[in-house]
Image (cartoon, rainbow, N blue to C red):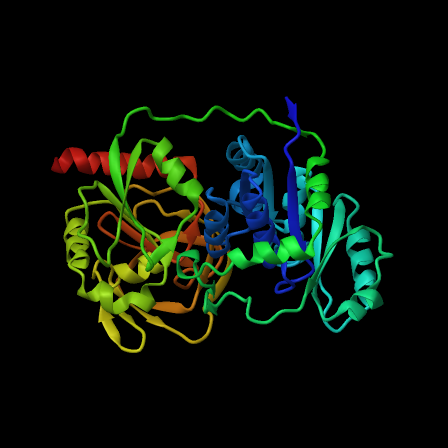
Length: 447
């Protein structure tokens, strides 16, 4: 089967060139015009998708060939886009920046998989005709990538625009003036989350005023036919086998939507709760994602939830924590002072002013450690400013082939049926089946 799905990739020459302004602004502008816009983000990002979802009223999905595989990128794209009028994919870093000296998992890699036209965002600050030379270099670098147009960002004046000119290799779709005061605030892990700032709504006005939306739509609609591969049929459990409590609040807000969906397809009922404000609901397992526990350590210490999670862990409940979830499962977390955490794992966490790890992770859950994860391979990403100091007799459930983890080639500190890792894993179907099966077994034992 061959279909035409209107789609456009917003790529940049480098990080910080303005592609988030253009991508989010285009999403907002098209949504305001009545289009059903399906947003995507290239790479392992949690923050930009939160803004996309708020702007479009549809859940933004990550597209990452390293974690998902090329078939996984296509599956997620087709599944999420099937009832959309247009799909807008925000890139990551520079267009051709991938793993090491390759373009694997780059924006260009995703554009090739999706056969999607690209709009290149160029920061023209302090440049004139040289900006056109940069565009020419990007157009010629890889002939497999079709750059349909360019948007120049940070234009100082009409005179500046005239000095750049428009005699480049591709049409100019927009000239965005240099503005102050429209930036979204940030912190150590990137921009603030969408629930903390609605500032990206202003980007829609910027794009409407500065870009030719009709030409962008034309480029998206002229994307080539995209054949739908024959995916293996997905196994979907029709009955709820167990209920998994998923921590979701300002302290725990980093989740891949695909992970939640796969747990549901494996037979999990999903129940969200706040470890800061709620008691633990009636669940058979717990999933603690990443986020900012360091910003809410006082509230987490004062909540009765941490005692309940400790009791549930001792009773054998399967619990999975990643990054912020790992920190919360430790005995303590040191920021401006030391706060008591859940005390499930034999370690203490502390924040650092320097980044401790950033990059992709590949590994395998060790056999004979955590009872329900052994032997499964994993891929994911890590990005953290904290470190974990483990007791001498601590046990680890993940052996790494790529990445830092907790240290020494290991990740996944484990105790009872609990595992906490720095890796933000992209869940495989086998992992989800194991997690739900372990939750179901716990339900039978304790029900």
